[in-house]
Figure 1: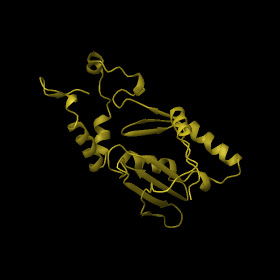
Figure 2: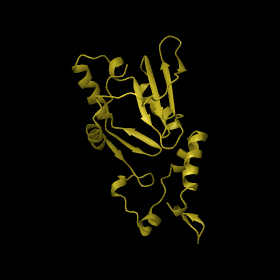
Figure 3: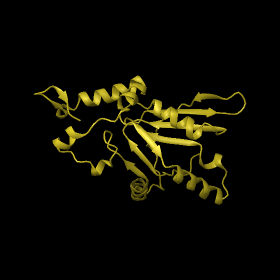
Length: 192
C-alpha cells in the first residue's frame, strides 16, 4: 500500500526527466533517519505522460534502469492524461524478471487527506519545467518570433524522438497536427 507520495527535485520537459541526484540522496538519508528501509520508501516510480499513452518511453526505461535497476524490486507506474495506466513490477534477485501489473484509477472514493494546496506547493518547489527546445525554464522562455527563429534545436532532439516508442512519437505528431497556429502557411514550415 502506498501511504505517501513525495516529489524530489527534478527538471522535466514533455519528453524527458532529470532527477537531482543530491535531492534523491537527501530524501533517502531522511527516510533512513526515520528508521525506514529502502524497500519502504524508494521502490515505486509514479509519473504521468502527456497525451493518452501510458506506455514507457526509452527515456523512462533508461531512467528506471539507472535509478531502480539495482533494487531487489521496483515498480514503474505511469498515468496518461486520459487516466489510462501502465504498471510493471521488476525484480532483480534470483533469476530476475518483470511482470505487468493490471491497474486502473478509481476516482469514485473520497480521499480525505488530499491537500491540493500542499501538493501544488511541493510541485512548485521541486519540479522545474523546462522549455523543450531551449532547456530554459518554461516560464522564462520568450515566445516572440525573433527569439524563436534564433533558437537552434538541441543536437539530440531527433535522437530523442527516434528513441521514443512509436505510440509516443505518434502522440507528439498528433498534437502538432492539431495545432494549426504552429504552422506558417506562407512558408509551409513548422514554427516552434
